Length: 162
Image 1 (cartoon, rainbow, N blue to C red):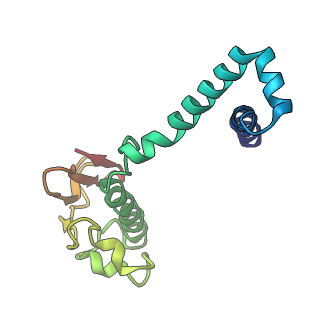
Image 2 (spheres, rainbow, N blue to C red; image 1 turned 45 degrees about the horizontal axis):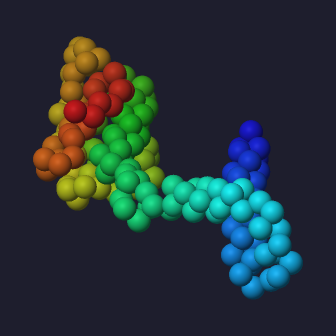
């Protein structure tokens, strides 16, 4: 499926460019000038379509219309990994959760950077749940500065961006 999309995109991009080059080449070639005299409106329409197509593709990148991935997504991914590590820890320790997130690092998490928020560069706020607490108890949360959202991990293992 993606190959078909790429082929169609290339065809839609290459054909108007070829027509535009031929239209501009009419200025320099007498043979092409004769062809354009036969169908000047078609060549002008193709030139306009080409310009609009190229502008429609490239203008959003230069104007800033393409939005960057919110940084709170990185935080949510980290919390999801921590949640899975806590669940593994809990299974091996009779339902008990770790006292600190740093206990997970050598065995359950590969990198120590995962237990730190990529936005504020501090360790996540961890509240050790009881074995009897419900699955909608907040276990880990991260308060970000105002432009971004806060991220919360619940005992049930799901992450929510607020």
